[in-house]
Length: 623
Image 1 (cartoon, helix red, strand yellow):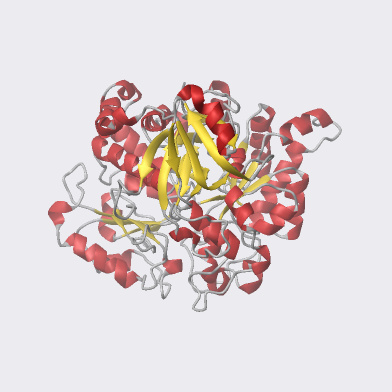
Image 2 (cartoon, rainbow, N blue to C red):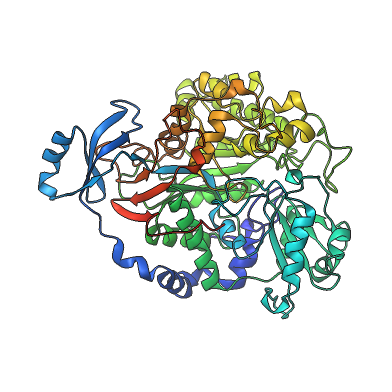
């Protein structure tokens, strides 16, 4: 398989422009059976002996099955051999479990749920950024779920200055020169929005290269020393978009392979500690060595604490899509253990709303105050030729592939839905009614779907599309969207979860990690209450779009699994499904519990094996 077309020079790729430097600098495809495998075996050596599935009966708690049909709550659950054997009354479960000689777990009033499902994150970039200086707007304690109310350019400057005072601890490039690499910068969430560029960063250091990645992944900020090191002469402002970011990262320091694998393990361990048993990588294969990416995720899934599904990233070139279609088929309904599977194709229509690169029908409300060099005030489209987007979409769904389309701005949503309409609607000279029905059953997704008017919601429902919402847009960015980026009226269109459900579309909630923190209960909370956490009065953003607790819980369990074509294995507690479970200290469906993100995840079980225990893993979860 040829991979030369899968490099990083793509418009608005929000999360992977740096990985070509990682894979070409550290790995080759032949390393999968050598150095890479050894690094994984070393990282996971202490866990190898803990992988025997347990025969266990759980009872005496709140057990919510989340099953589409059948009883919502049951008295007992029995598992053996990594599979759910029986559900129902304690007597019936004990009888069904007799051949397995089970032990019993008294939940003592705690809550048992199916393991949570993260339907959209970016695993390998998240691992890389863990080796960088954290400059995010999220407080490290507790569990990085809250905004830092004192976040500012001054606060991140202090962290950078502290790093510069210890040059021996800084990462070194191939020439041995130290750099400051920082991740998570977000001017839109600062107490006072301050645009960052070379002139500001030069005050921190005029000699040590500084490269800071915006939390959206769509932008980077460099000082003059970093621009010079990367031989970038056409962006004196120091504010780079994706193609130039990739050029800078080609000369920036890289983590050593063992360090990167250790960071990857941390990312997935953190996911498990949050209660996730399945995660979906929404863009694998964007580098010049896609088989290495796939190999990394396969090893991590088979050795680690979560299942991994993946979508194959496709840049805006038909040749890139053709290469995937010629060499892969989606694995949608395999009933094996399925620790790793490729499920979908990923297309990216535009950029980031908080990064001011999402493609809009009218200028950003703050465009007269804040702008990105070389980016129009209406943001960017990856497909100026929308007919090419339609052709690529038609090719993918015509070959039976589910598709995830990243669409943030309202103009991006408009052309994405127009293209979906072109490839999903029967018409003379086009597809038949039978073919249209077949295509619509692929669970085609619109990712983020940030700004949806009534017409867009109606069209999505008619075409049987499925929105997955980055709900942190409401909770974390809602206030700045309302007051600065969009204004009151347009902000009402953000993440319209209730309207989507009311139109008959199953929804899922995602973190887009690294963009926002992992946290299924936090995501559920933000969808249920829609509190703008950055607002002085903590008001709700468009409270009419609040959803019920049960709908929010489904959006991070069964409906998220359904979006990912994993619901035949996980997402609900039903006999025959995998024994992927989470035990919580409190019931998120209890109306008296409001701060859902603070509910303690006491245990996480994958395929009948306890892979996380709060009692055995004290301390806060790392970034």
